[in-house]
Length: 116
Image (cartoon, rainbow, N blue to C red; front, side, top):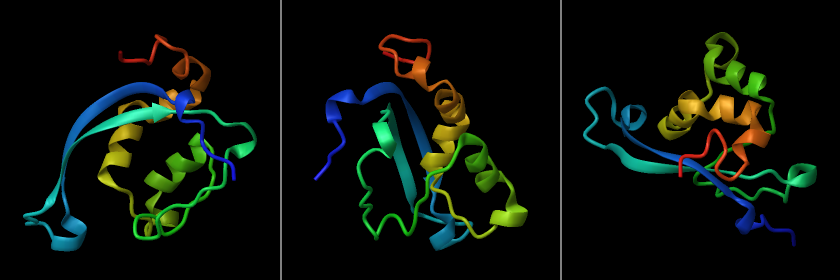
């Protein structure tokens, strides 16, 4: 079996967010998430090890480019049925696309994007 080399993850930053669960409970939701999320990046050769997401958490996945992901997230005409977690949207809108498009710089210890 092939595993992700944990020692090769690079910490970039963390961010605080709160989001109500309006999908499950409607606009007046009493429930939600209030978290601090840590953003870690890793680059694996040949696509990395096979993914085995928890089916309770992830219904499907696919590999995409930054432009394809932007289109999936923001082009509601073609992708109106996709549901994104608030923390994922938060990461991508707070720098995720820039970090991904400048991956080599993002992976440098102490680099431009690293918030030590």
